Amino acid sequence: MGRHLMFYMSAIAAVFALTAIRIIFTWEQNWFFLLNLVIFASVPLAMTQRLWLQWRAQHPPMEPPSTPPHGTPRVDEKV
Image (tube, rainbow, N blue to C red; front, side):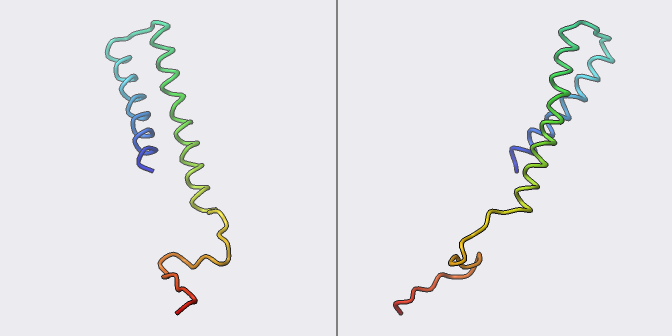
């Protein structure tokens, strides 16, 4: 989850930074437009990653019935 938050927040910050740079310097070159498009495309990627993480958290894999719940100590039958 930490890597996801870093990716998501850096994508948002990059979009805001490039927008501010474009407003301040009034750049209209093609390379800057392409860079802005690539950075802006990273935001839906981060949101897709967030959706996948939430889906996995809500639908955990099925555990075998012999596995005790988390926090329950395993007891050997030889006692």
